[in-house]
Amino acid sequence: LFERGQWEPTGFASRAWKPLSLLAGAGLGVLAVATPTLVLLAAGVSRIVPAPGVDWSSFAGESLFVVALLALVQELGLRGYAIGLIGQRWGDVAAIAVTSIAAVLLALREPSTSPLGLVGVATLATCLGAIRLRTGSVVASWLAHVACAWTQVGLLHAPRDGAALPPPP
Image (cartoon, rainbow, N blue to C red; front, side, top):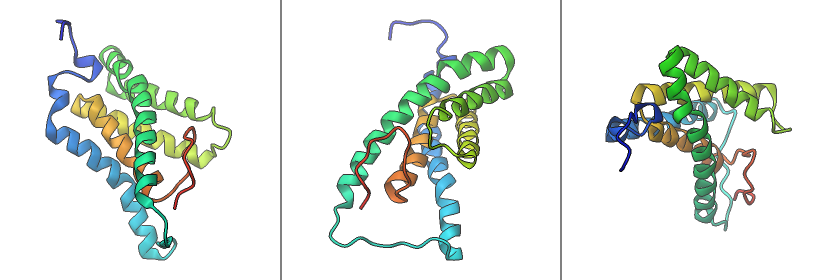
């Protein structure tokens, strides 16, 4: 409101709030998880097992809140001002690479992280960085992150490091 400076590097400039960019961010986040999930279901590797008498809505709401909060911290830290400054100074490729490496280093702090999990973190971080730089919106990358993480946690019941959630239904 008061700042008259350059907001573009922060990911909160006026172009960051375009509805199409925000919808694309959320859609890409769901697509990143839904596509391989549908392939696994179609191939018979995974299956849907309903749990009788379990309230899914409270778990879904609580997991959405926790995932959104964790994703917000990560997006503001890695793909907020940092990626904008690195991108201005050394280019978009360097910005995505540096922030993706930082995300992998942060994931190494979790003792349960596997080598395959690190590949997933690097891939997601690269995708989120590309969304952030393409749309100019940290909000779009946050929505993509939330959609991806909640699809995993809320729908597929995958464990989430750093999140204290009740057991899924």
